[in-house]
Image 1: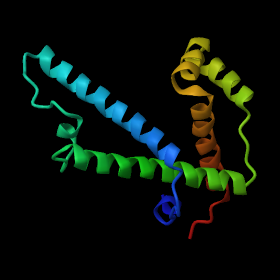
Image 2: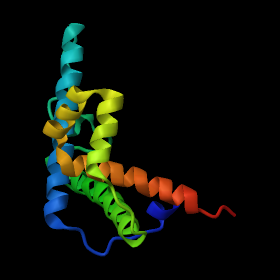
Image 3: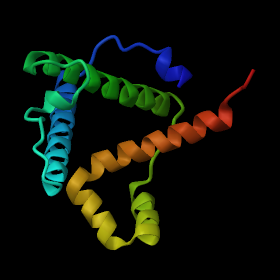
Length: 143
């Protein structure tokens, strides 16, 4: 948390931020649909018609788009910081070993679904963050 809170990003990769905005918006839309279905199951009419209706302090699509950009940049910031530490420390992720371990613990179907749903890049990025956190924990000096 200290590193994330005390780091700044000088520029964000536009394509990455745009992709993250799409993912976050898709997640928001899924959550809206799920919420409305739950209301419907109990015979309640939901007041949520837009994704921004479920967001605190968001009143319209323009405000939602600004907030969406902020959330995407925060996600990108975390990924970029992890990647910078990963590269500077010379860490690595063995994708084959990752897949073998995931298959052993969660099963082949789970791994196949992960690959199809999220892709190899996402899986590596997630493992990279885990490797970085382990590295930081092993090398931290607590005062």
